[in-house]
Image 1 (cartoon, helix red, strand yellow):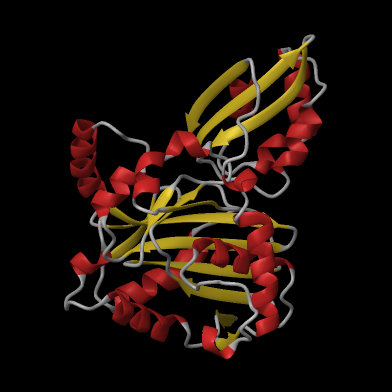
Image 2 (cartoon, one colour):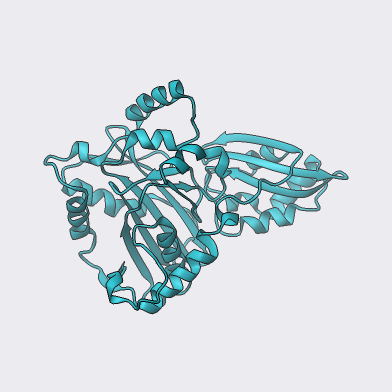
Length: 338
C-alpha cells in the first residue's frame, strides 16, 4: 500500500491553479484520481483534514440536510461525496482517512476490514474504541467516526472521519435545524451520542501530534509517494469538473408524484417516482444508505415499467436490484417503490 502525500505548494510552478490540502473538494478529487487514473500501485492510503465542511451523502437531498444560513454565515464548505451514508460535519480539529484498494475479491460493501487498522492504532494510544452498528466507531457507546464505501468496477474506496477535538456545537448548528430551542436540545443530545477522541486520551495532545502518532502505526508497512505537479494539475481538473460544481453538490430535486420511504438495517431509503400514463417516467432514490456503483443503471432500467406491483417486482428480481444496496432486501426496496 502507498501513502499519498500532497507536495508543498511552494515547490510547484506559479501557474498551478489555487488548491489546498485541507479542501475537501480537492481531497475527494484526489480519491477519484487515485481510483481511476493513478497507476503507481494497486492500493493507496490518505490521511487528511478539512476546513469546516458539510459532506453530503451521495444519495441525499442537500438542502434537506443542512442549515444553509449557518453554512453561509460561517463559511462552511458544502460538498457531496461519491459514497452513500449521511451528512457529516468536519473541521480542522478532526481527521479523515481513505483506503483505495484494487481487486477487493467479492465486490461487496464491508466495513470492519478497513476500520481494524484505525482501531488498532487507537488501542495503542490507550483508547478503548470499538466497531459498532452499521458503519460507526465508538468509545463507551458514543460515536466518533462514521465510515462509507464506494465500489467502482474492481476498486473499493473506503473513507471515514475521526472526531478528535471537533466543535460539536458547530456540528449541530450546521445541520438542518434553525430553531434555537431545538438547537439547544440537539447539542445536549449530540453530546450524549457523539464524542471526541481527545477526551479519552491518557495524556493530552494536539491534533497534529495525534496525526503523527496515528501515522507512525498506520504507515509501518507502507511506501510514501509525494504527488507530482502533473498529479496536482489533474486533481484540480477533476475537482473543478465535479466537486466544485453546483450541479453535483445541489442539483435539482426531480419532479415526482409518488414518494415512499422506509428505514431498514441498511439505512433510510426514500423513492421519488414520477408516474405518467401508468408507467414510470423517472425514479430516484434518496437517503443515508450505501450502494454500489451503477445505481443509475438500476433506475434507468425501471423507467418505462408499468407502475403496478407484479411488473415492478418482476423487474426488481430480473435486475437483482437488492445487489445494488447494502443490507436492504428486495422486499424492502419493493415496499419503497409501490
